[in-house]
Image 1 (tube, helix red, strand yellow):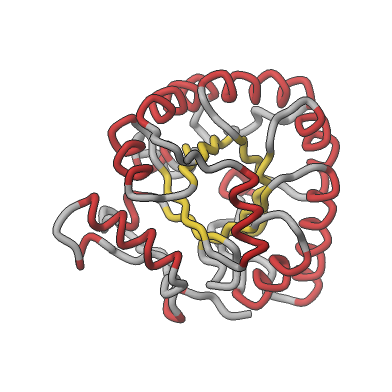
Image 2 (cartoon, rainbow, N blue to C red):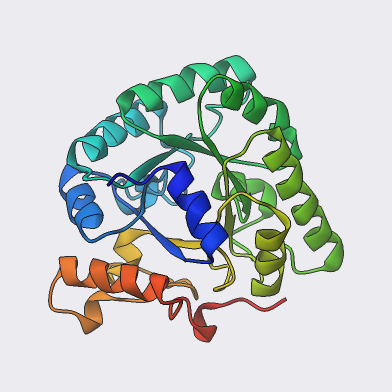
Length: 264
C-alpha cells in the first residue's frame, strides 16, 4: 500500500515514527522502498554526494527533474519528496512552474528551505494541489548567509522564532516540516506545536520521522562525519539489510541515540 501524506499524519496521531532516506536513481529507490522506508527524498544533496560540489547551490532544476524521474520509476510505494533547488522558488511564478515540473516527473511533495518569507509561496503551491514540506533550522541553501554548517536555534530568541515560523508555515499550508541540526529539546517543542508531521535530521528522537542521506547511513561519507550520522552497513552484510536495519531502528526509536543528538 502506497505511503501518502495521510499515512504520515496517521503515524503522528498514533505516535509511530516513520523513516525517510535520500535516493537519486531507480535502483536505490527500489531497494529503499522495498525495505519499507516511508519517504524517499530526492535531495539537492546530490550536488555534494554525486557531483562532488562543496555545497548544494550548483544543482539545477533540470538535474532535480531528471533524478526525480529516475526515482519515480524505481519506487515501490514510498512517498516521493523532491527538493526545489537554490533560487528555483525565489518568486511565486517560478515556484509554481518549477514545482509543476517536479510533480510531473513523479514527486508527491516538494521541499523548500526558508522561514516566514515562504508563507505566500507555500499558500500558492498548496491551494494549487502541490504538497509542501518546509525545511527549517540548518538550511544548506543559505550556507553563505549562515556562515557555515552550524546548529541553529541554540538560544531562546532563535528557538522561539523557529517555533513561530513552523506554526506560520503550517498555517500557510505546509503539509510537513523538516528540521535540520536543531537541538533535540527545541525539535520536540516544534513537533508538539504543529499538527503536521515533523521530520528530523540531527534533531533528536522527539520528531515524528527521521531522514538521512543514504550515502551517510551506508558509511560512504568522506571527510567530516556529521554527529547525527550512523553507519548501518558496518553492522549488516548488505546494502539492503543496512537500509532495512535503519528503517527498523527509526521505527523502534533506537535511532537517533544520544550520541547523534545536539544539545541546546
